[in-house]
Image (cartoon, rainbow, N blue to C red; front, side, top):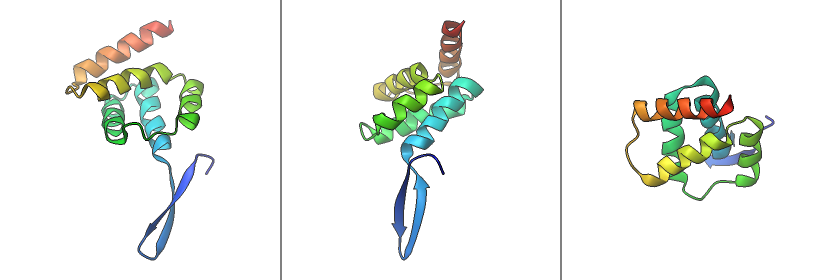
Length: 102
């Protein structure tokens, strides 16, 4: 695995898992490039749960490389607001993000 991992112990078992930043990046990139609104909602939920506990030294460069940093910032703002997010809101955000790219 090339992505950052951490070791988690569950009873006598030890598991190597990808970090929460890897999963979050996957959701933001999936929202931005695959236009999967469910991933956008999952990213919002994850950011609301994680708060400020994210390793931005890995996450920011990853999202910059994937062309998804602005999507992250917009989704993070939605998470901070705590306002319910609808499919329509996420579709509108996608349209706005993609119109800026052209």
